[in-house]
Length: 175
Image (cartoon, rainbow, N blue to C red; front, side, top):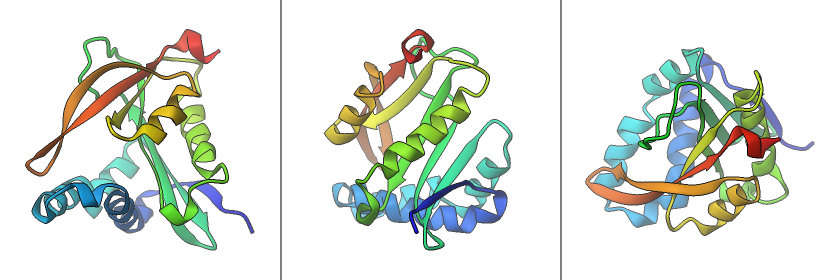
C-alpha cells in the first residue's frame, strides 16, 4: 500500500509535534548546539502550539502516512515572512518535511502539490517559501516549481541565527 496524505485535525497535535521534532532534528539537528536545538523544538513544535495551528481556519497541515505511521508533513497559511512585498492574501508554504527513509519517489512533490492546491483553492495568488540558504536540494525543488529568490533573513534556532532565503512565485507564473 502506498503512503497516503490526509489533512491533520486538532486531535493530531501530539503526532504532529513529535513528527515535527523528529524531521527537523533528522534534517538539521547536526547544525546546532544541543541547547539551541532543544529550545527551538520546545517552542516551535510544542503540542499545544500545534493544536492551535490545527484549529485555526487560516492554516492547514497534511500528514503523509505509511502503514498508519506519520512520516511527513506540510503546513500552509498566510505569509508571515519578513519581506516588504508581502501583502494581505499572500500564502506561504510554511513547512515541508519527510523522514529521510521516505524521501524520493515523488512523496514530497505530492505533499507540496496538496498544500499549493489548498493555498490556491480560490484561484492563483502570490506564494512564498522560506528555505535554509544551504539546503540546495530544496532550492532546486522549489525553483522547478516556479519559485525565485527575492530576499533573505535570519531564522532563529535558539541562540543560533540561520541565513534563510525568501522565495516567491507570483500568481501570473503559476498559470
